[in-house]
Length: 219
Image (tube, helix red, strand yellow):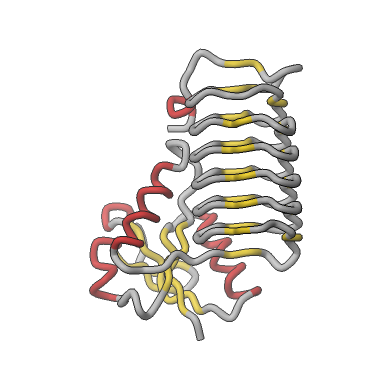
């Protein structure tokens, strides 16, 4: 039986534990976070181990790591932890819900893809992305690494999304545009032009640009 450790101790971490138990043959061995964030010894009856002692408790040959850190800091924590555990010799665990429709060319490692996601023909997905339920990614699109796509957002064909972007609930990205690194697209916003790094767009007819950088919005 395959084994994994979940990095995180919040509600999304618990949800992912339920998904893994219900839809895969993988056994969750433990949860892990930095010792200063441990507030209980067990979650769902499963041991919580200090991240600092992870290698002493579990060999990289024993288990993979599912990183469940969210979008705060434009997903920088998820990126940092993912790169750290790879350096430690662990592999990154992915989860793809059985109801997802996958027609793309490539999906990398450490991705979480939930219910009823549609990934169209010739789409390429990088590493460490969280793609929530009902997301529709159209043909020939590239989604790079450590992006967070909230439920029911729609991405048109031939979009190129960089790293560490955030797409809010029901947001829409027009086909054929470039979404630069760390772009934040708010809930229900429509993005119909190329973005620049750290841009922020909020709901409006065209997606109104804010005067703050994205990393200031999602602290």
